[in-house]
Length: 322
Image (cartoon, rainbow, N blue to C red; front, side, top):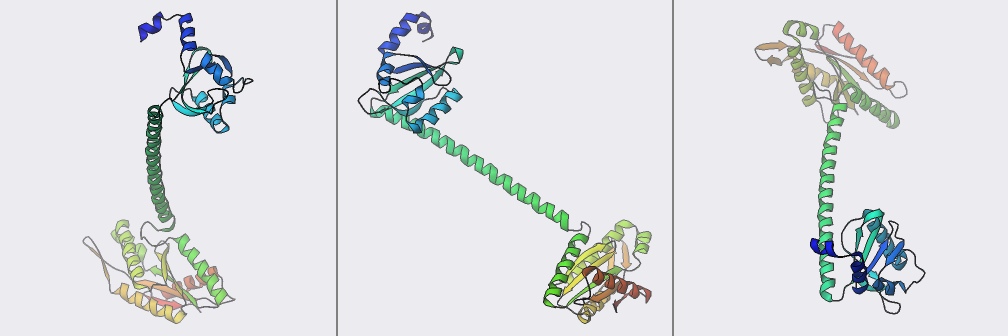
């Protein structure tokens, strides 16, 4: 085939183009017609004034034509094309071949038989299947990325709301819960109490046993608090060795009963860390929300003051705010 291309002259090519049944036209990159063979001339008679290739195509195929010209890809495609001035349009197997000077050679050959049409359909079906496979692969990647993003969002939420040492909710989250509960109690005139819990002599624990042992003490206290409160209540790390318990729909009597139980439970528990045994106690301050009087910060301040009263009176006890 290469030798044949080498020996054919320009005059031979012109003769060949005028002899073959395929329609051949030389067009600019924008589709403007430059030159064409006799087979194409019979097609152009349908619209004698046409100066651009897209004028010979149906409206639905013009955008397809533009895309093919822009891409300049050597692939076949099928389109309805007028073959003469009187007869109906027929399907043609078309191809664009880029040549020098940014021009393109347009070749369209009529599908004379059902076999040719079937081959074109099968070729198109293979391309459709390829596109479907690529589409499913892209969807799978997108789903995996969404799963990864959801996991990152969950981790980010945990970092934002959970105290990394005790795994209780952190100060910001427990304060937000307190604010919400105060608004609810104010609106519905319901009961609400809070308890501020402090580990007694915690500085001495750190000084005697070291900070790693102190951290383990806080973790075990946090575990006991979480396991000992009722379901509607919430406990969070308020800061340092202090914890905050929110008791919705509870008065100060119910909160003090809980405080007494927590003090007894921690007092009777020996915290064992490696070869060390640590005895700890709690001081708890209890305050009840007063509708129309308290805000969330005054309620918290009352409970905090009550906790210091418990410490003043010997620690290992609870005290109700006056």
